Amino acid sequence: MSKPQLTKDIWLVALRTEGDAFRAALSSGTPLDAPVPSCPGWSLADLAWHLSQVYTYVTGHITRGSLDKPEPRSSDPLPAGVDAASAWTDAFTELVATLDSVDPEQPAWNFAPQAKKAAFWHRRMAHETTIHRWDAQMAGGLAEPIEARLASDNVTEVLDTWIPSGRRSGPADRAGMIALHATDTDQVWYVRLRNAGIALLDTDTLLDSDEHHERATASGSASDLALALWGRVPFDTLLVSGDATLLRGLLA
Image (cartoon, rainbow, N blue to C red; front, side, top):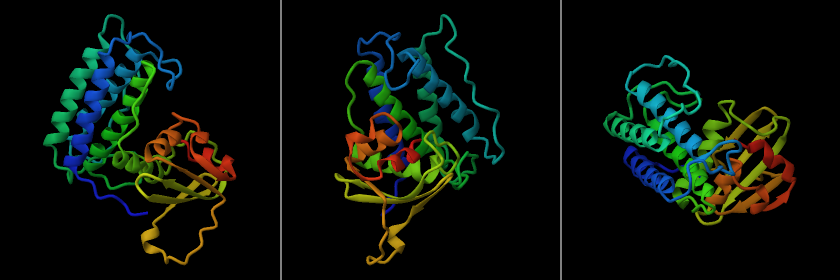
């Protein structure tokens, strides 16, 4: 697996593009009280409010220059009388301005086994917005796939950041080697599950003759792989062989 070298500017372009698409979903004519099928129990307004809270949380701590963990993010429900679309717009605008101004090398706390730098949040906010853009479009009945390069790194983020930080939603009693193939970007991820543990193998450091002896493989577009790992589409959307039950151990 060749790791993509993405920059602050690339993440900001992705964030703005996906944010514009989220905004378009909010103004598409789909009622804000419409259910979001991929987020059971949430309406489109709830989704917008959730994202606005995430944005506000990140904006509030990324410029501190501190490695100390900030206060927990608010998870209060949408207050009565608050316009969720306007709240999202205000929070998104402030987030983009903050991420644009902050040095990606500036110290900044994060929850994962990653470098404690602001650059973590440029990447994380691009992916957070991307997945929820897909959710928002699904509330209207049809969602666009994730752009291939962005989706490929979304897969990598699940495997090198999300699951290793203890944020797995799938079972933690699976063990074995899994290969994920993105057919449109020609990328392969080799993942070793060790029950609660996970190892993402860097194949750039392995000999071509090494045998991985994968027990399960899943192939499809980078977008479908990312959406499957986030539980947005079923794994049978992909071409799966071997022990398909292992794949559930990769759910973010």
